[in-house]
Image (cartoon, rainbow, N blue to C red):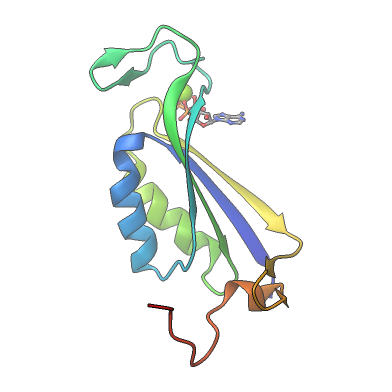
Amino acid sequence: MSMTKIEIITRPNKLDDLKDALNEIGVLGMTVSQVYGCGLQKGHKEVYRGRSYDINLVPKVKVETVVCEIPVETVLEAAQKVLRTGKMGDGKIFVYNLSDAVRIRTGHRGEAAIKDIPGEKPES
Ligand SMILES: Nc1ncnc2c1ncn2[C@@H]1O[C@H](COP(=O)(O)OP(=O)(O)OP(=O)(O)O)[C@@H](O)[C@H]1O
Ligand SMILES: [Mg+2]
């Protein structure tokens, strides 16, 4: 089975909804970063927290997740469902084929590095 990295760049105020939607479809891990970006409008027409950004870079949030068992389309649909407002700046999703992964603690590689370890409970 192949591994895919999905990178979602969107409005910071959508982070909670996006996290909930991803948890609901069984996404196991994610990385979240605060970033600045611009798309086609170079930031000119975007409003963030009531303020219109006349500079090039608008605050965004980036959520990265790697999936193997969950279909990529399921993730794309769940993300679009919560993120689409129809206004400029809703965001972008980039999809990458991932060549490998390592769980450092165990040395697991590939899918085994992403999946749960059967019978293992999280440390308290
Ligand atoms: N070509 C690109 N390469 C890398 N990052 C991009 C690219 N386009 C957009 N992004 C990132 O995605 C964020 C959201 O982009 P945005 O939603 O404004 O895209 P858009 O193509 O301009 O669509 P819209 O017309 O809906 O605004 C940007 O702030 C930037 O961080
Ligand atoms: Mg844009």
